[in-house]
Image (tube, rainbow, N blue to C red; front, side):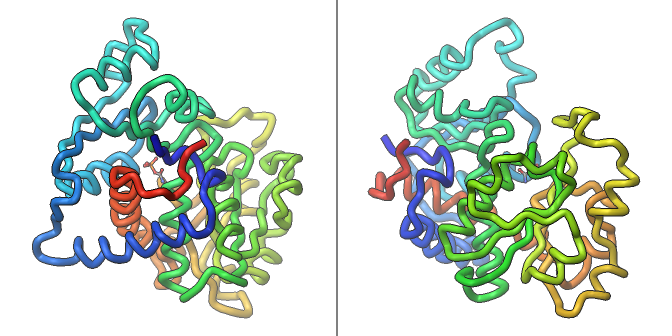
Amino acid sequence: VNHLLGIKYLQSEDIELIFQTAAQFKEVINRPIKKVPSLRDITVANLFFENSTRTRLSFELAEKRLSADVVNFSAASSSVSKGETLIDTVNNILSMKVDMVVMRHPKPGAAYFLSQHVDSIIVNAGDGAHEHPTQALLDSFSIRERLGDLAGKKIAIVGDILHSRVALSNILCLQKMGAEVEVCGPSTLIPKHIHSLGVRVSHDLRKSLEWCDVANMLRVQHERQDLKYFPSIREYTQRYGIDKALLDDLQHKIVIMHPGPINRGVEISTEVADSDQSIILNQVENGVAIRMAVLYLLAAKKKISFSA
Ligand code: CP
């Protein structure tokens, strides 16, 4: 069975195929009739053990645009609270003839673990601070849409790299597509092993912004923070937040991204988030087409080396 567990399992040709398929689906969902019958015989369960707005709704919309049957599961209102294990939960859901599982889980490696223990196609919708493959795919797709190509482009990923699954998946995806990546943030929020990934490291936001073509401003993850990493929000914003004055003062125009949800006034000001240099809502729009492409290609059992 093929899965999408992480960007680390994809080759650049797989990513290219996903992008080409997503571009076709993007045309479909911009038509008055947004649906195609591609997954008419497929049932998908969306399992969310952690909160989500964009990823959950976007997967559900993608599944419905592909004419799949959809069931949604949220841990908070389930029998997980009575002590049922992950494997028992998923096997019970699969016994109702579910073909694919989309799962978000707070534990790194949860999607991989599931793929080893249940008989279903597994799509990782974010596993702890590990990977968020569909976010990285939609981010790279959005950069390519705006700048024409990824090869040779300079991307700065700014903020809380340590706790971010978006950062790791983005680094892997961008590098596979030929982009150069710099991470920027306080040393307490950048993991020590990051050099082994072949990225540049900066602690100076202005220098990073002068270097890059695109700045991906990550959210400060209050829910994963330990105060030892993070002395003060005000200090963080002063050193690593982007505002209009800084954006306008740069030597060249850069593209601004953010995976959401935004902490307005912390890592990014409202003026920057809503400016014409921001592609934040394009990212969200492209999320549906990317997820349609992933689900379609997995269901069609295309040989695109998604397996671990
Ligand atoms: N970008 C992202 O994963 O957002 P959600 O947590 O709202 O799904």
